[in-house]
Length: 161
Length: 146
Image 1 (cartoon, one colour):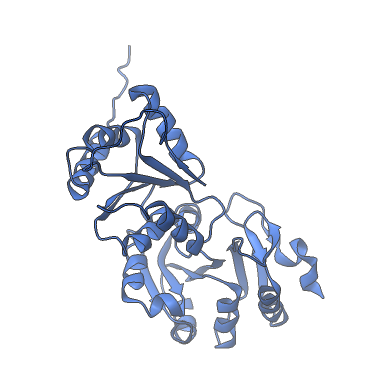
Image 2: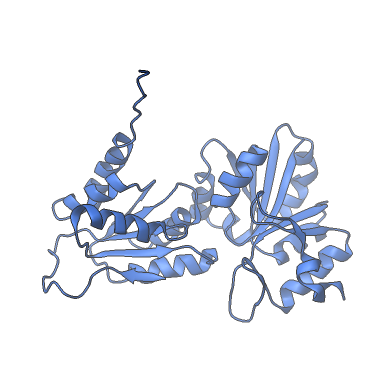
């Protein structure tokens, strides 16, 4: 058992991930997969220190894609966090086999349309989502374990076309 | 949402050495804490409040940055818990403000202690004191069976 949660959330490590999903799935490791964070010494350090008691690994997309299969066989549960659908798509295209993405928080920005209270998408997000869906991935919207899990295509029927 | 507390009315300006505070929390905890503190000590001034509600990392960081823009001599960022977005976004914003110190795990005794010491201690001294105060305030008293 290793991969317990692949999550798309623009906050990366934060309360819902550490407290709610952490209590449910008890991760030993959290991978923060983000080229920007990986390129910044101080941001790497910030996230490494953000989860006391949990090992945080910060990696760029290419590095994470290479390590993905090995991590799947490692001991203990692991989370993988990306900030947007585009990063999830690039990770998949780089070879990471992810069956299900938890869509946990894509917040409002200018030009984005509301899907629910914590998911807003624009045309580019939808294009990235379609690529992930066509490749056989599932996109499941659920901010915390206690809330209802719903397929993104159900909440945003435009994606089905 | 940023709510500067009580900037009008008293006619007094804060001491030049006062350490300003920005409280950043989930939901409306910051407002509730200040309301509770006001029940104890009366009207509170020079404390700024912010919620992370509905904000992405970038937007929360920008909101924190905007709230501390006028701080010329540093200040304190009080957040609810370590590793939450209020803390990590605060740490990002703090990088550009040398004298800014973050204290996580805010509670009511910690907030009250801040209010009584913010005019006499520096931000780093205050942060050390509040860390201890917040810890010491958590105590357990067991019931005694009749």
